[in-house]
Image (tube, rainbow, N blue to C red; front, side):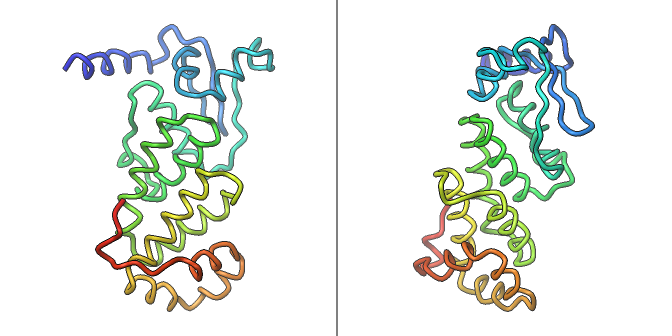
Length: 204
């Protein structure tokens, strides 16, 4: 109860009281607190403490794609609440968790990445084939083989269909799947090389 009350009290700062850092993204702006951002994110700590432009200006402007709009808001929520509410956004739940995981990894916010990754693992296994294709495209278009966290997310995407034989068969039956996979050779290779698992073995 004490921890719950502490988080609740901390979330009151989200209104901008005593804020000392402006975070800009697209046409949105948040008044946040350096101490909290730096506690959660090594990227923010470096940006505001070791002589970057943000150190003197007190303004951080993120240059991510527009599709990360909700994910950035989730990151800000996490700074204050140690959580985020996926149901308040128009982005589908599983896709949002994927976006948050990518953003959290980019900005070196490990606890948020772990939270989003766990949530993504739970939801990706239940999505329909068309939704899976959207999510798979997002993951493979925004990740690489060189980053361990990216490979983990890619693995979850592949396992979601390889671990459900009926889902894999249905997915491969999508009329546009050939061109979809040609554009994402890494995904095609990962699907081809993934070991077939019993559906009962697929656990988040």
